[in-house]
Length: 232
Image 1 (spheres, rainbow, N blue to C red):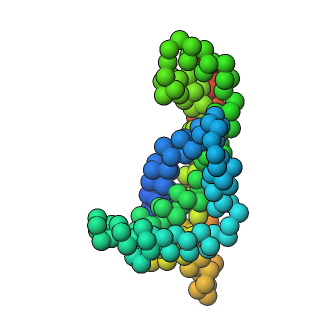
Image 2: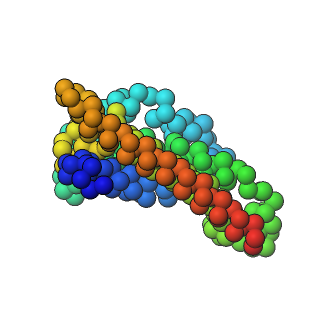
Image 3: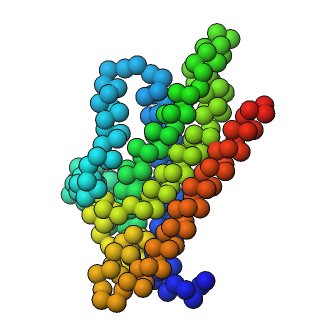
């Protein structure tokens, strides 16, 4: 298996896994918070927030990548601030690829968690509240455990989406081998070279295997957690 892919190809696969892992891990707490707000809270601008969350699904990925570059690039408002005050640069770095992947996967993460929260019977939360539990305790002790299968499924779905992100990533961080060249970017690069179809096909197989493994793992973990919750 090690000889099947070249070191550069393995590097692209490893970078994609790294980017997807951190994109999912960092965005998960925000996804849970936003999903809970959309599912349970009533506040002005709720529909605007819902629209902004799902905007990356509608916009062309290149547009999302451009907006990220304009915002977090060294000349962008946020990017310039991070660079001057903290020395943090995300544009044309693997961290920028993780940011782009997180933005593109965030709508799927939020939607899965929101559906799971909405499936929780509000009467259970109300019962906990009448016993003196605060909103935070109700969420931590009632809502969160019951919607855990949806959270797991959403996280793995976001991971798989981040693995396949291409348009926003290549626009925001370019396609630098060994630094920002993820699995989709490597496939694109091979397809631009005469005779590179074979190399691209190998990476396509790897992408399919990882995606299927993520989906199967999501189903298995979600069902296991659901059975455990039902048993308790």
